Image 1 (cartoon, rainbow, N blue to C red):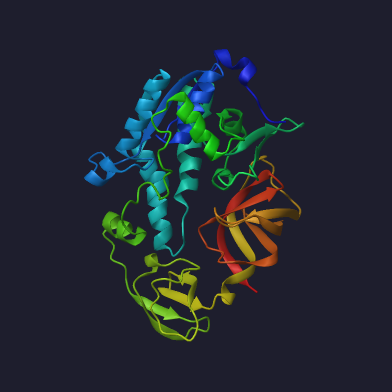
Image 2: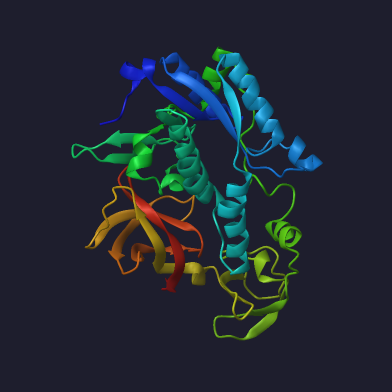
Length: 371
């Protein structure tokens, strides 16, 4: 059963997380049209003394994003605030991002931001201020089962589906969350924005990680920490030295560019060994694995499985869900066995569990097993 609060919306207060983009702007517009008491808010997560780049950038954490959101709020005639979450963002998103790369893994900061900032800290702030709901411009559906549990559903026919980044939602969070643009495709979102006279109707989507702009991740880490990447060995799967790498933070599993080693066949990064300061190289075929292990498993229902589950699993945002069997292990760990080998399973990334359109939950990939 898809949840619809419209009938009782008139007395309900909603805080809309406004990024300055068209999706969250239309979310605020639709909620006001439905009779909610709507307030907009943008999170301040940029530095106290931002440089020119941050000031002029159009990413979701830039000063220009605040100005766009403020203009939309003015057009909608709703209250608008900026909430200072800079310290929380640094502790819960930026620091883990840097640490994960330094340990030879590849993080997903957008998932961390959703989990720790938007749907934990911002939601609790909204509830403390007397709001009934937090709303965002994510493409996903919330429903409630016959047992009363909240569920998160993927929009399988929508290429903008964002459930991969939302797997960590809890029952408490879902009960206070509205996703107003659920079921609407992007072209229609822009059309609604144009019809409503919203000033961001044609604003391009943000593509990059919001706090790493116009530089490589490695350069950002060096600038932030002062740590200079240490050269090490490229090796093959048997340990044979093939050449020198620039430093482990420049590489991720599946990467081909930037290796610069002569070989009779294309070489790809198979693994990053931070302890040995080595990058393991091999063929494209060696990138395929039939199993993975993952930690910190989270299930949206709040109920951890005790038996093997038949699921579909998604190992990165842009991947399609593929059939797999999930086996629960101890200490929040799980093992997945795929019906067919999958390519470039990357430690540090999330693996998200689906059954049809229902999002069961997810975990953080620790490693894979070769074919």
